[in-house]
Length: 304
Image (tube, rainbow, N blue to C red; front, top):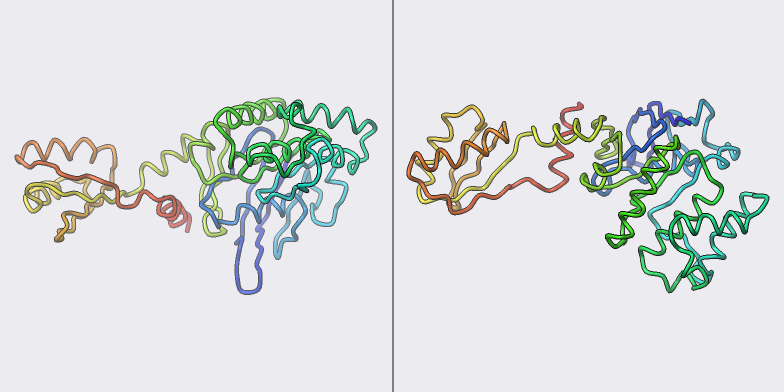
């Protein structure tokens, strides 16, 4: 099945959460990548039919998602927020989801879903006694209980230990390989790279980039980088670096140099070579703009 967003926007009063997003999510695994507050959850909730677009359309195989209860037969949603009744056992929680979907054998479906996420052993414990990772898994079981063709997961790996994370990653990959349409959000590039075939990047509510992980990684790696450098002779080092095209600019201050590298790989080879040739000792080399916001902000400026 295919989800299509056409010029979709969503605003709350004067706050624009999603701005004119157009994208297509098809079978396989797609990662929705962006920093916290980028609009990922809002997009997922509109795709699931839980939130109305303020503008544009969201369709599932050509059918409007909003106010179309028939689509819930084909969609499973794992929200980032808990949304889990702590007084229920894991078994009761997943069984109730199976009954709400009107499945012919809800108990069998619940057993299968819990086994899929390896939650059979603790199924009779109350959800309020679960760890964060266990609550995440029982939410996935409830979303899978009716065997949907489309699965939407909002930051599904949060709170999971390494073994739980690997198991869920394997499960997502297997479902994607089986032809299901899987979309999961994350703010961690490495997480998305390990699971998704296609990556959609959103920043500040806008669609910033689209491609496979190699294409997205190249966009992020090839952007201009800013480095803080301290050396035994900052002025001499600055003069030598400016002679190479990989250096976009150098600022000399009391705390050392700020160097903008327009070609990261070339600059990484250049810096030690120049320092050695000039007899300058490097005392500190550190990135000044490696936070995710700066990386994603670069992508959004490229798309405007």
